Length: 173
Image (cartoon, rainbow, N blue to C red; front, side, top):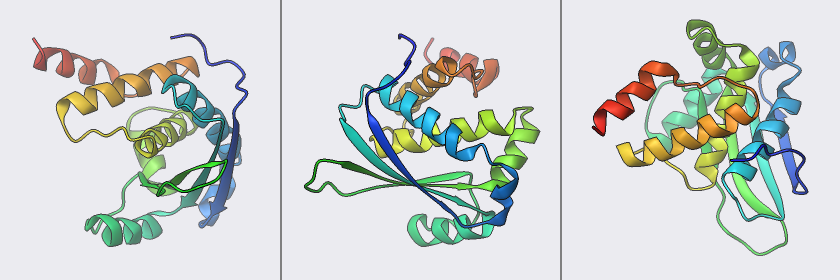
């Protein structure tokens, strides 16, 4: 697909910082805006305007959300909560929460920059808000393919690496 380039879409991102850990990562807001814009473009989301809430939290906070809404009493890297459809000119897409410690651990373990991994998690969360999922192999392949495309447009390497890509290919041969 073509490079997303500048977008005419107005994307309002309401960022709430729950944890002081995020103070050391002041690029988060600009990276989120760029990642969301690219994801909307590549997902062919038919939106004139969009509003997204982004919560920058810690592992303890996201664990509480994960336990309450998904029944899983453990921290995770990103959670998405799609908004119910309603009237109005602005599309309220929903909420994305990203946990700093889990994100940082994963980035270090996978040899990725914090910026690249954060961008990936925001793209992943946004695609969930747009209705993409990874419950089945087919859904996962579609969603991961779109994530790869979006991130490549931002100059970010394949987040799933060659091993993940070859597993998907092998499963379909």
